[in-house]
Length: 184
Length: 93
Length: 109
Image (cartoon, rainbow over all chains, first blue to last red):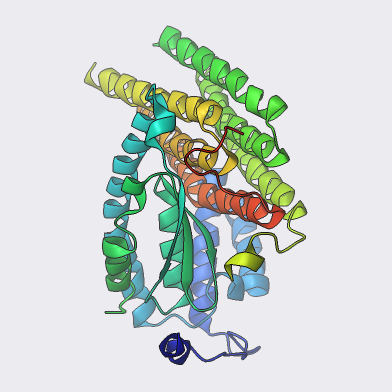
């Protein structure tokens, strides 16, 4: 118990960003994203509608750029984005596999004997907030397991529908996320 | 192909009726919330089917997108409404 | 013709996922276990159905149909982002309300 207390991270009360420190790359990335969504949703390419889009995207990225990216974009951000893209196909495959398992459970005539709900607890070794959020959302997105709670000491509580769904947590999913976010 | 889509949308309508059972008779309020959320997800897909049957898909896609957003916000707001106490967390942590 | 077969396959598998989600919603014993089929199988089902419909409406290939297909995929991305968040919000509400998870041997609720 005492060893655990020594491992716990120090409380950091400083805000994630300071006013006036936002860099141009954050504005640029937000603007490009907003403009892409505008073009996709409007579907019109005449100068009038495009000008309206540029105006509103610029306003939105000026007022709320720090909501989307809380720190300046560097090479690490781009590497993380590519690592995340490489992680996605594996996640989709896992979702398909466990969706088939839950489908089998829900069509099974003697379902009540097969399921065995339980609350699992484990401590994750992922450090950054974004990696923990990705991990928790991946667990919830995989059928059969739902993240109930993650506390400050990175203790995860997971509700699993039966023994099979929860047996390989954290395991491979955590390893792959750690690789995608460069925390090996 | 249109007949096939009509059959699919009727099947989805039947599933919505079944989910409504959980929405009405669910033993707790949260069961009702799950039922309503499931109905909302199915309705988003049903709207796309309706757009295909009326040959106005470009319009119904926007409606479906807005419906998905509203469904998400409604569930979040309703769930936040019940978060007043510590509940089981007191025993866990 | 091949396209029609792919579309029909996507739709039928997606509707099976929807049916499984609804059956699980009705049959599972308590609120926490009902979330598993209701939240996730519906996500998978809407992914497959919307993918099938996006492929179907892509022909004839024009700018309008490509944009509509992209919008359909935007709905899928949104559902994949929103569904775990909504599920987590409901679980958190249940946990705070003090509902005990069902264990093997308890009566159905």
